[in-house]
Length: 96
Length: 484
Image 1 (spheres, each protein chain N blue to C red):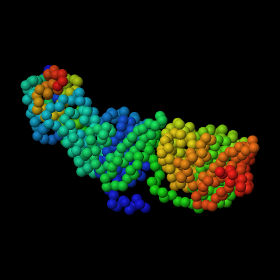
Image 2: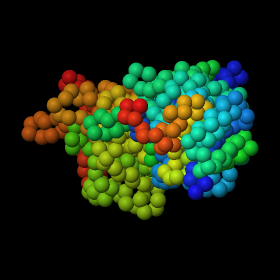
Image 3: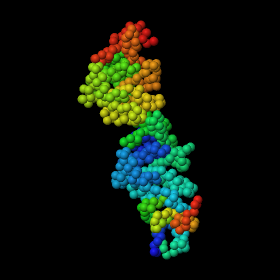
Image 4: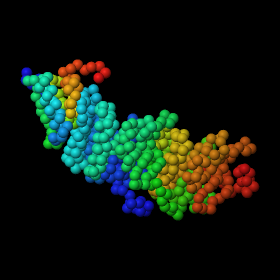
């Protein structure tokens, strides 16, 4: 079950935000999902048409394709706690 | 004329192709700049924007991108198809791209810095794909419900409008009307070139849509509120005709259908292209007088249109038959056409538009509106006056001679009800009934008739089986008595 979490990170070029988001994501995955995740980086500058499928508006956007349902987290993923909540790895606290 | 002298100093315009809107904006929306269209729910702002895109693609060779944040693309296409727009076809022809951006706050977690570059990338991609010149954002304020960080959102919207401007994109940005501002989120702060406000009001259960150009930097524009319609032919802003009083004034005279009445009108009848008001109480024969006029026009080989707001055509034809006027004959040979409608079936604007459509299809030389008073009950006085002004303007620019009948209630002073419309009329003929020696007498006189010497006599007349018969002039003293 190495592919339990199929993640996609949408960016537009190697912006500081994009670079930060990728390294934050790697760190979080290594800590919490080691061995059961895959990350696909999609650069919309190279493939602008791919933005439509996942309804990409803000960048960077992390999309959890699997497990379903699809989840989206936008931003540079600097707040680990919120990323974990967004990935359903932590229960969502009320009034958060 | 005036239009040309302005054209040089004014900014470039992107025509909307919406009848009437290009008149009040003096050519369309500012080219290469965003225009804000604000209005409440159901005010027609989405349809206005889509008309701008569709007309741009079809008529002006300017492909467009529709970015919708509201409905999904399939629903949208279906909604506008009912108005005669086939978005799918335009998409197939590469003249239009519809991109649907859905934002649901509950699905999205926000952490750290982000921007809306995804929107920019998608927009740019779509613009490049078809060489778009026009963009519609509908309704971008929805994003304020989807994203928590309004600081980022505002900065990005500002950047987006500047970005579109740099690319020379003519954009329509729709927004929900706010309580105090034109938009809920104060978008007018970012879009300052042109602001259009739409409004939807209901008066006496009849709805009226209105449009106003609130602001238009670097351009002259009509500042009033103008009624507009959404029907199967899309949006039409009234006036459909010119704002200027520039129609010609023909010198040709045409018969009223009664030689005696022509005699009272300087001997020659009405001016062609003028407006005539026939007013009087019930049973004075206004319709019969109008029918005489139509019969004479048909006999001259002209085309006539009879707008009926009370009777059905068959009832009218039968009644006129008894007065010796055979209208059926002219209906059969195609010179006379009826357009019957209940006044309260729609608002004034719809009536006006239907009259436009009818006149444009048939192309009559003369028209009769009978009775105009029934239409007047549909709106407020000022609305009715505005509508009549437009309809008269329309007839005059086309050189159509128009006869309006007006029913005066017996309790009112004879001339009071028409005071609000009388100034629009070139000729005003009054018919009245008085009782004397157990006999009802009918009287007719010309109250005014612009541009001609007219009779001051009050003449007696009768309605016979040969129609209206006007008696020779009465003695001066009896005439004086009747008029007092």
